[in-house]
Amino acid sequence: MIGYLTETLEQIDLPADWIGIRAVKENSSWHAMRDGHPQQNQRGLNQGGMVEVLAQGQFGYSAVNQLSSEALRAAATTAYEQAIAASKWALYRFTPSVRPAIKGEYISPAVLPLNALSVADINDLLSKLCEQLKVSANIVRTSAIARTHEIESWFVSSNGAEIHQKLLLLESHLGAIAQASGVTQSRSDNGYLARSYQGGWEHFSGESLSERAHKIGQQAVDLLSAPNCPTESTTLVLAPDQMMLQIHESVGHPLELDRILGDERNYAGGSFVQPQDFGQLVYGSPLMNITFDTTAPQELASYQFDDTGAIANREYLIREGVLERGLGGLESQSRLSVPGVSCARACSWNRPAIDRMANINLEPGETSFDEMIGSIENGVYMESNRSWSIDDQRHKFQFGCEYARKIEDGKLTTLLKNPNYRATTPQFWRSLSQVGNGETLETYGTPYCGKGEPNQLVRVGHASPVCAFENIEVFGGAS
Image (cartoon, rainbow, N blue to C red; front, side, top):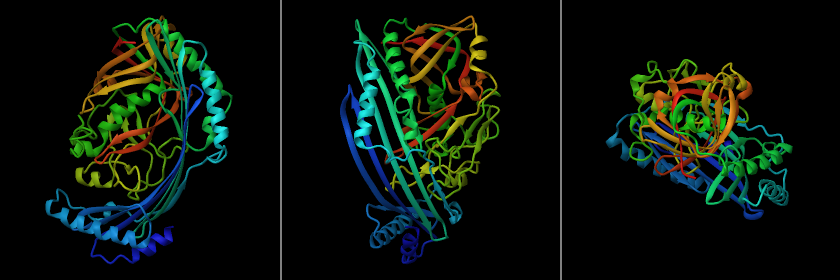
């Protein structure tokens, strides 16, 4: 495919400063079971190409759902005309320096290939999991989902870029809803589709699956009779599956450089972070170390090159609480003159690449889980996100979880339902008082990070240890 696209590129005769072609082919399967009954067994193929043209300092784009040489050449002409038209209203003029001439390849590692299980095997597995979720008559809904994606992309450019990447992805979910005496509670496998990883069926197999399913069902039933989370300001301990949401909403999105530039203000919102904050802003306590890391082989958003061809490296965004870098590709870095990362990403062949988070991780500390809980006289421990609300500047938020336990005199005690907490982003992260060690580190992901006009849903990953925060307002909610 690289040779074919290069030949097509050589046939394009336009007075442009730079031309690039990105071809994408995605094979997907979706399997869903509800209460032991199949809800979805579907396969899909999505493929096409995006042509980018840089002319008179502006980029133009045109996408086609076929990869014939004729169609791609016609798309290049359309993209060139758009670039010329846009140059009349240019806010900033780019050079080809924002499109590096890189060559390379990346392929996801997988132990059990995505074609290792038949549709019958998958349905049988999901049906058994629904049975294991239904631990009592109080379970009124069970669900089990498994989805696979093989995404292959090729990128070539007029200045010599040649990149091939093949991503193998598996997304899964287990959930149970319990109901009794007018009370309804739900429990999931660390959140909806949180167990989404790069790799094969090894991420959705083994004896632990049955154990997890039974535990999810039992906890949903147990929550029915649990008291509501109390309303108080106390020490809050968050499990890694809730830290995923916390990092995503209050670190990932506010650090996106296009938000800071104002490009997303009318849709996804802006950010409380200002350009002058980089290198200066005390974002959190000295225990806060956040990295952008697409080198983790199993994390959902790993890759070696972003969708503009830039090499992706592991970088600190926040080090010892101080903001260092933003989440912005070469275009936004050029416009703002601040350091960023290789995170210009597109959700498919018919979208241009924009600033997106990828794998955003909180680095582990030195405290074991038992040591952390044992040091707390009064607090609340929470797991698994259930609801979220955050303002359009990513400053003030309120999050709810599925499951909580009271912490009293260094021990986990009473089960609590409907736990919620609220804070502002700087206040919250500056109250970070303990960070769990590597043994508490867990990795999750989400396939549904939305942004951009037209909208783009991309996959992101988050890894975090368990963490403790001081003097946080917690409260109960409706069942």
